[in-house]
Amino acid sequence: MRKGYTMFQQKIDGLDNALSYVRKRANYPYLKENLAQLASIDTEVLISYELINKHSHTNKELNHIMCALLLIKQALDIHESVTEGNLTSEKMRKQRQLTVLAGDFYSGLYYRELAMLEKPQLIEIFAEAIAGINQARANSYQALQAGKFKIENLILAESYIHQHLARYFGESTEYINVIKTAMTLARLKGNKNNVIDVKIEAKNLWIQFLETELTKQLNKIKNGELSDRLKNHLTALIQPKHEGELIIL
Image (tube, rainbow, N blue to C red):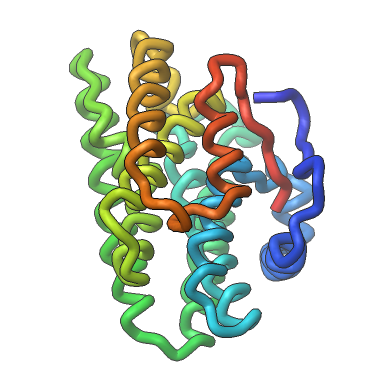
């Protein structure tokens, strides 16, 4: 991952507007002053935008779903980062409490965004996917503690909401395979320092495996299912030296 936080080098029409909406909704000065800045990997942001924009009838619908999706992923990542065990200082205890508070805050925002759309089925889809992600992350942690690693758990943990959304929108199996592989590959290349990623052995071999899988999947997908912009981005992601960028939320 490139050092620091960067924006896409080129402005991307409606994506800029959608991200501006997310930033306004996520703005909470106290958390911003005391915790690390929210940021998502560019691959996740672009896949989210392309998927939702493809099926949204209005900018309002696009903004609400995009905001809900990015913020619940942030909430899940924040909760995953909370350390267990004894804390040796009041400062550490306060930091953990703030981290939990932040995760809860963004979880509440995601639900509010979906509720404003008055589409109960979307709320059900998100809730089911969130439960699946929590289970997959628990399975990953337990397996790694036992010296094992299953890529399937990481794929679910990283992309399950997107998979559910894609099925809801009627996307093909080939499309879903592309996004779940790409999101997992982007996560591994992003060098996250959470409790799961730091314990994965032979990470480079898994990255190479996913690069090969994504290459095959991109060759199978029908013309027009992916925008040229997304296809070009994913083609770049396959390159060994591609590390991705972080986008501030």
